[in-house]
Length: 204
Image (tube, rainbow, N blue to C red; front, top):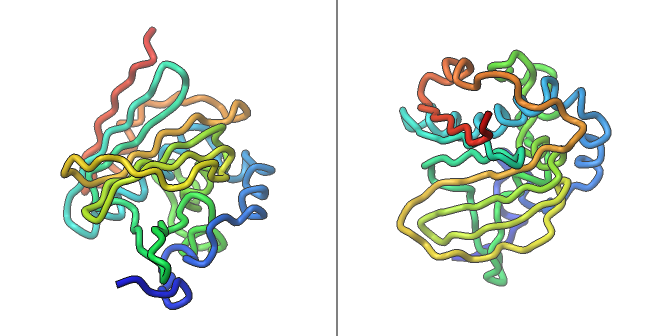
């Protein structure tokens, strides 16, 4: 049943806020603060979400792919990003990319990621990327959406279901961020319930 967005309970993000331009601009203006360590930190921000799901279900799997063009994709096998129908039966996805994570962003006591820096949420990744493509597969439908500098430039574009569920976040980090210089596998112990595979296609 479709219901009014105003009645939806906010847990991790505000359902009423599709895009918080001020929030995204603040992140873009402070890359050293929000992505200490550069690309490594962005990857860990993404990995924290499948790690959350793995912790709640007991196990999870994801693949981090390092592409030759400098982009990174993180694909998991979870339930996918929550997507609902509003009172006009339009699909609405939880605004994880373009608004703040209510659990972490303004909390000085927020959890730290395995690199020792604070977790702030997926909007940091979107805002500090030249582009980001969010592909979502759920039992109630699958779609993809593109962002540029954190702002969505397409709607939810339906894709054919293949029976699987999960989320893929593919992003090209901004040129002002230090490139990845670590072996990501050494951070895997920070999330014991998450099995992580790294596929490095960057070449010599």
